[in-house]
Image (cartoon, rainbow, N blue to C red; front, side):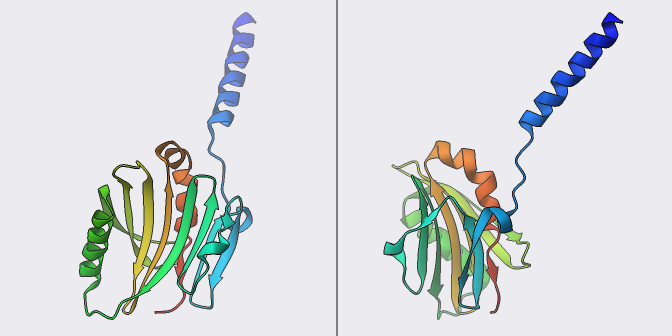
Length: 171
């Protein structure tokens, strides 16, 4: 009888421990706010972030929460570079902005858009970043997140879901 009680006590402890360690389920449609750029682009951002009115212009919007920043930008591109060349040029731009430890890979987002993901950190400040970049024929779309190391590590899994909500509705 004593062993049965110990067994149930152990099971209870393990269940409570497992429940505590479960990651929170995120539903970006419910937990985030939708931002639409006319009928061309849409994405979600965390409801705890606030739009920074000082950055509103036709091509850029920034969302802030203390030391964390998310932003969306679009850049016209009238060159005849291939997508692969554009990716290398974008990485070069990051290096010019003192970024290091840059990792780049392709990923198909839930929207079906094939994007490039860039991660790294800025030398001197230690700010870490993740950019989701979609290269179209005449425009580059960028949705990015940056934060100090500790905040970045703590939030990047959740923030990545928001970054990957980037949807380009036309090309």
